[in-house]
Image (cartoon, rainbow over all chains, first blue to last red; front, side, top):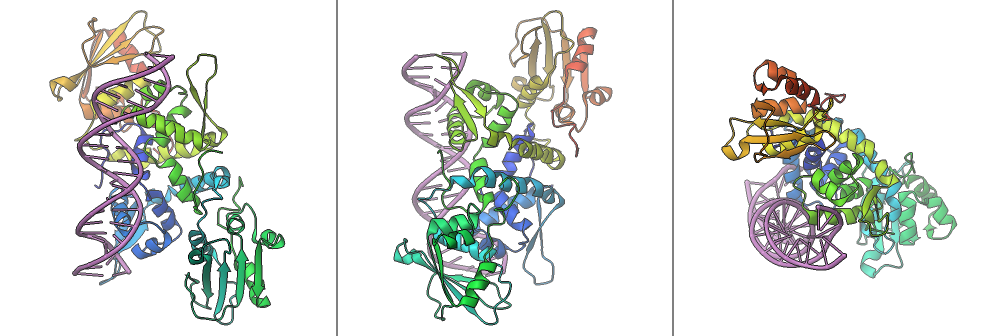
Amino acid sequence: MGTRVQGQFCPIVMAAEILSPRWSIVILSEMMQGSTRFNELRRGIPRLSPALLSKRLKELEDWGILDRRITGSGETPEYFLTEAAEELRPIIDAMANWTHKWIDSRMDPDHLDAQLLMWHVRRNLNPDPAPKRRTVVQFIYPELPQKERNYWMIVEPGRDVDLCSLEPGHNVDLFINADLLSMTRAFMGQSSLEREIDRDRIVLTGDIGTERNFRKWFVQSSFAQKPGA
Amino acid sequence: MGTRVQGQFCPIVMAAEILSPRWSIVILSEMMQGSTRFNELRRGIPRLSPALLSKRLKELEDWGILDRRITGSGETPEYFLTEAAEELRPIIDAMANWTHKWIDSRMDPDHLDAQLLMWHVRRNLNPDPAPKRRTVVQFIYPELPQKERNYWMIVEPGRDVDLCSLEPGHNVDLFINADLLSMTRAFMGQSSLEREIDRDRIVLTGDIGTERNFRKWFVQSSFAQKPGA
DNA sequence: CCGGATCCGGTTAGATACTG
DNA sequence: CAGTATCTAACCGGATCCGG
């Protein structure tokens, strides 16, 4: 029968007990976007340790919110949302929209995180039209100390976009010099890539075809355009 | 400008950061039901320590989710929901309905809590028609050890219903002998007071007029009747 | 009484390393 | 790939105390 509620009569207190532990709703959100494997979730949620992920998955399974299955023989486990979890989807979506409307503007311009931003930009990058051959884009944040300044995205036809913070050793097709706050606001939707380029806060240099492509590939955070924005 | 988000780009992660700390959404829920004063919230949320309440109120104020105001001169502070908080109301309501639908049934019959149940029953009691004079109802859970067995509710016209677990020294008008699980299910909506009385799991003895009244006063948890039940 | 602040022991979470 | 193990830091719960 799974985990049971101990003497609670207020549904909000119970809901909090289930959904409040750190990362629980983030894990559910990630699964609602399609992840089913342990390491897929790890990749999808930076800063979540495997120990805690393991613990949370067990808890959520015990609550009947997700289902751990081993599909084939010799297969590794997969996690699926139950009907109860599906009915949380509109709630979690609403929370995301609420945050975008009321909290996004409170981003602290003094504590931005280039690496995490790049991670999200890569995740949202939609390389369409696909390049004919491997294409390398280098992001440069001149204001940052050497170690956090450079990021490379490698776009190869038929493969996931790769991100690294060490020189990958390929020719760079496009350089993007950017102000970190501007790139952040362009991604989050308080601004846009085009506007920041017009204002010279983001400067694209290099192959003109790649530049044209990249402007199409760059996709804002999926919550940037939602109603209430 | 209040608290600021540090380098987060996923709105769900941000929402979790704001709403996940223990009691945060319970406090908001309580305020959505009308509480505005510190001790009103304390009374409304058993098991929440004043220290943590104070901390959470400050955090929520910093996020711009509630507003601390001192209305008159020499007045004590009052807390009010901001517009951002109001837009959380449908989300919190939806969470409560979700819990009722998917989690209520997981109540552990071996770890019920009579005192907390009585606290909620009192809170939901609607003494209408009001009695002419002070009326005392004694709840008895024969299965429980002596110390947790008896509760008294004192209904006086024009006053809040009072609850105590020590003999209040008044004549008792109505005795309610009940099975704890049955009373719990009657309150939570998996059953009803009438049904449990019919099945003799809840037995009312004493003044017949008070009995008739009590059957009307007893109100189920406000979430018991919601859609999705 | 109201609105907190302080202290302390137990629980939870994060970082890192390691394993079948 | 899918987790454990271990250690430390942060957070929480409960009791107590304080000033108006």
